Image (cartoon, rainbow, N blue to C red; front, top):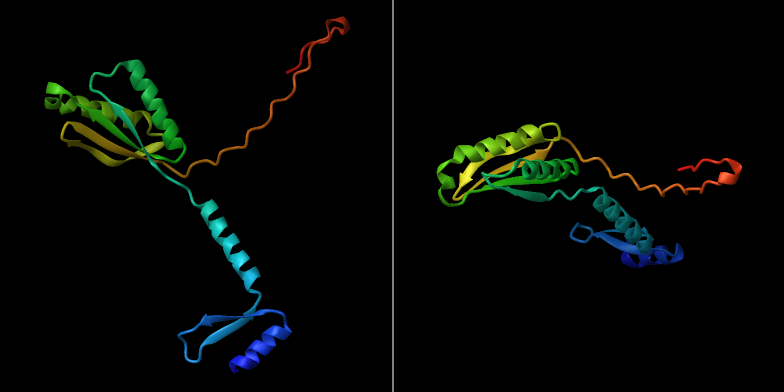
Length: 168
């Protein structure tokens, strides 16, 4: 159909004539509500962005002579990060002559991997990189969606005159 005919048809229907494939022979055009189409495309793009997850790499640093309490705290944080769906880079930092004993770092990294085995797995095996030994842990499965917080239930004060007990 010729261009003037297509424009007249679009005006009669109170719609837009949109060029779909300008390089085709003959060019392809479509009669549609362009504003509505743009809105629907924006909604589709927004929905796809919302469904995508952002996985970032967190880093936790250890030392070969770390205390048990510090080790437990850092390892617990690693498990939390993995539970949220993040990857975790575990770094053992060696100082001075500690670098001559990489087995100490390996022992710590093996112990960390063993402690978080239920929520994550070793993605990159431990390797010595200068004065640091690194290992990357990845989450075992997809992160659980965060549940919306429920408002706290109101607490009614006890009325001792009526023999009431406080409710929580």
